[in-house]
Image (cartoon, rainbow over the protein chains, first blue to last red):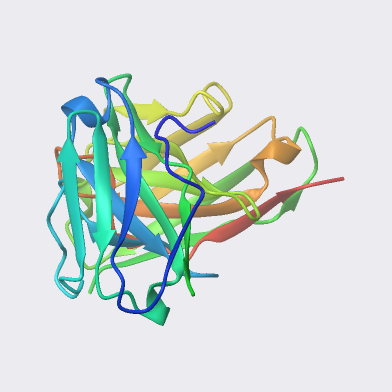
Length: 109
Length: 121
């Protein structure tokens, strides 16, 4: 049982916009930045979004993040087949730990 | 170029011990938090521990607290994870990951390739 709650799966067709949610509490998302990672099969995670809504260099602007209260969202617009991957949210928890969401498997139909 | 290279993964018997290493290059190692994150086969990411840049602060997930110890040697740009009382639930790929900054511990863009720890008799 993960501290941050994500839907286990999401899907969309090429070109669509998909949103993945991440729900937490006042001790984690409510008081700290949220970060998002993409993990392709057999590879290490890749940082997609940091500090709620910032993109590292090289990440397409099709990926965007937002946060409101104790929830955060990752939006992927113009969905492409190569976006098929697992997506994780993460943040610091005031109990002195890093917490991850359980992950969302994105399928491009 | 930032690089992180884990080593030390192995097959170990239940109740045994193992030490993992993570050697870093391409950044000022002593400045950053460093994390261990693991992923059991077919499962999601699980944060294990984090250590501050000077090694003075370490934090652990409840699942490993008291069994795992994270340390670092900044003169060697290397972080360690000493694991003991290993059980089947510790079987996973273990990643080291650089923290976002000297203040923000959460992993950033730089992760190692992972090292596999298998606990089995």
